[in-house]
Length: 295
Image (cartoon, rainbow, N blue to C red):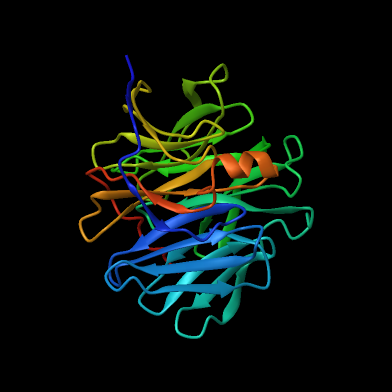
């Protein structure tokens, strides 16, 4: 039986993002980064000082990966770019579906090999318009295709399994991965089939013990799954559209989740005024930091 927990956390940032997504944490600077995709914004929050900055972007972006102390990799609707942290300057790195201007980047995460998995989807969430790509050494390789809303990209602690979903179908897939390269080493199989449940599987992270923490869009829950696919805990959040979790704090022992108010009418927004905020669950976890992207 799944344990259900009421929200005991706090709002870390009450900026109401239309589509908050792609949170990640830099342990070197104690900083949380995340996007408001539709607002073309990159948000930055220093946990120690509480200083908050919003960086306007020239295009929609959805994923940030650390490179080193001076640089980040951004996945955007116009391709992959290196961002200079000090100046915000963007330098083109690699094309991502340059022949499909109707698509944009979506979910993604770095693998322990230093490679990136990055997904795309139609800007209007067209059926099966998206894909997932492997990025390493400047090469972009399509690894999965025909996905409508690709999400939940994360990896087991040893890098031997990768996970992803199509939120529209809400089946969490698992695939063998080469730990040395981050490339798939087999065919995906269904780990969790939750099509009959309310909402859909959205962004996920995998903790140090291999448990998968998932933001379930449309349900108001962050769920925890065992490595064999059993949902063992649900944590309520005061927004019906949680989008993606991230481990934060110097010891990766805290959990935040981005949320969104995209698609909500005035009545729905009035019922959940904190939709779009960055929320901390207020629990102790055994997390892992996202690896740096290897240029």
